[in-house]
Image 1 (tube, rainbow, N blue to C red):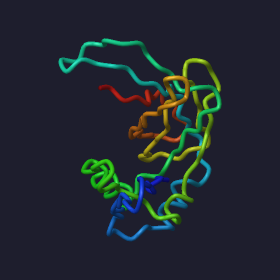
Image 2 (image 1 turned 135 degrees about the vertical axis):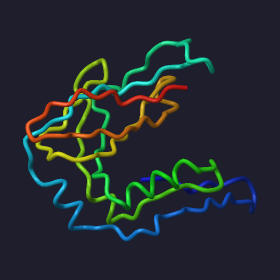
Image 3 (image 1 turned 30 degrees about the vertical axis):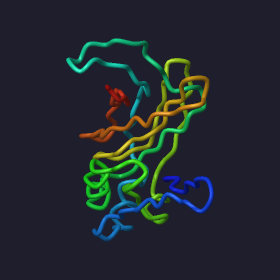
Image 4 (image 1 turned 60 degrees about the vertical axis):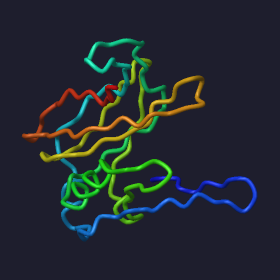
Length: 165
């Protein structure tokens, strides 16, 4: 999920510490949450530039056609991961999940020019969604993420997957 290798000139190398949740990943709970249900998330993935006082100052940048949106069940493991992630220090310390936890996800792709995506077949519960928005002609990307909660089977949840600066 995270690329953490960085090399400098000569013999210098940047060491990034990966921090994993201490909570054991609950395979049974994650599997049950990802079993087939009748709910769906209809979302839009985008980002906006905002001034410190909250005013929009730039253009809205939508996820490009074909961008992968990942959905993870909100288990205790994922909750701890997100708490660790709040303390990330670029180029020094990053939260990470195990390859096993990364396998328990659903992927969808953006299908429209305005960042639209749909994830169908969900059960009621909380889910963590994440994608990357490419900008500056694909040279840079920004993660956008959020937590969605489906409260009843058959629900169609409208969701905005965004990051506000």
